[in-house]
Length: 68
Image (tube, rainbow, N blue to C red):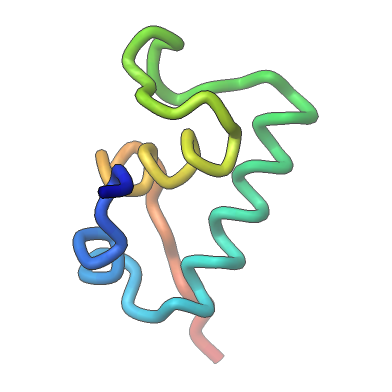
């Protein structure tokens, strides 16, 4: 089974499309800046995509939707 569970994350995010966009942006930010929200040894994943999913699952990355 994959970690973190997509079902758990979708309760926090709301839609798969928003999740994909947020994970892609956070992953790119991690690659470009090297900034991680958690200590390196706390991540289970080795890829930036997996790490960004873990950050969302642990509520270390907050998602705010724009109001129009």
